[in-house]
Length: 85
Image (cartoon, rainbow, N blue to C red; front, side, top):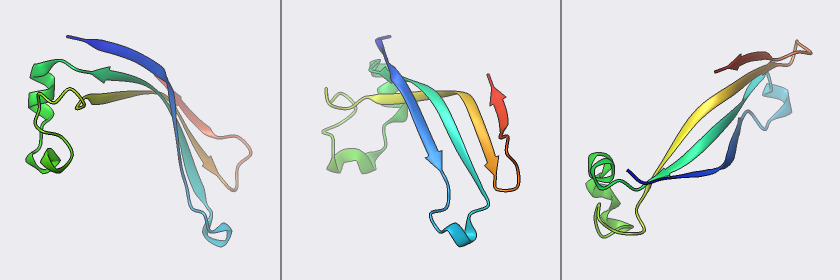
């Protein structure tokens, strides 16, 4: 199985309207690019044919993200709730 480690991935999810802004989360993750043929075949979806030639297309890979820290921030609290794995 061929795996390449990538730099950290950060995702922020929230509401852009300050009047409706209550909670938002921030997720920190590690990303890996998976190029194993069996994994590519298992994740293949026929709707991808508009982008890739097939599961054996060299431009097709799977990005696996694994969270290691999640913060839930609330407007009423100065400290976020934190999960670390």
